[in-house]
Length: 288
Image (tube, rainbow, N blue to C red; front, side, top):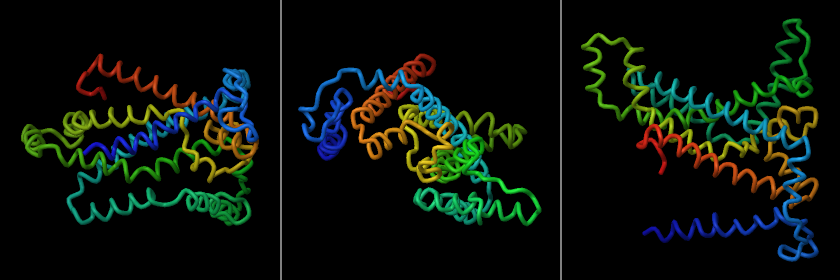
């Protein structure tokens, strides 16, 4: 019964790992995959010696930490509110509305963003002009985009994550809450002493799953929102957008592959390290 799963991972996960070879070559289209000259670690050395890669790592890690912490906090808060609503019908309608952005294409999200923030006829600048305020050109102001990007990512993933936490909260034995109410516990005390401890295992599991991709940015999020706007690169350029430019714009396949290999190795080491740390304090919460 596990044969289809094994075949899937062999074809789509293990066989593509042969492509790691490109990270150690100066790829030449005329010579092909295996005949391109071997350059060892030169691609990696160039990445780390160039000042741009430290900026890419900083942006990628900081954004992913914000997505991870802010996203989970918003999802838990949303799940707590939904679980406390008395009308099940209203809960289902609210879930559907909150879940809807998860299915919206990033291309459409980029169009919505442009409709909000462009200086000519964007909604925000139109409101500013109607109020007699000066216009604000978002696409020339790098400092505005970290908050915008984080808010959009949290908004888009809110529905999916809240459903996960809501399912865990719904599975908590209601007799525990009844006992707490009999003992005089307020709603906030019930949340702090029953609900949050009960969903701790789910929170730790989701965080550990996401840690492996902490150096893998949301390429479509960044590319669809800001594109190749070089004025915003200082705060919006991540490893994935750099790899895209290396492959599509600069045709530097070796450099792009080196960045991808670094992402994967770093993510693997991080997951193993965090799992060992979690296992040291609470073995039941560890992945393995």
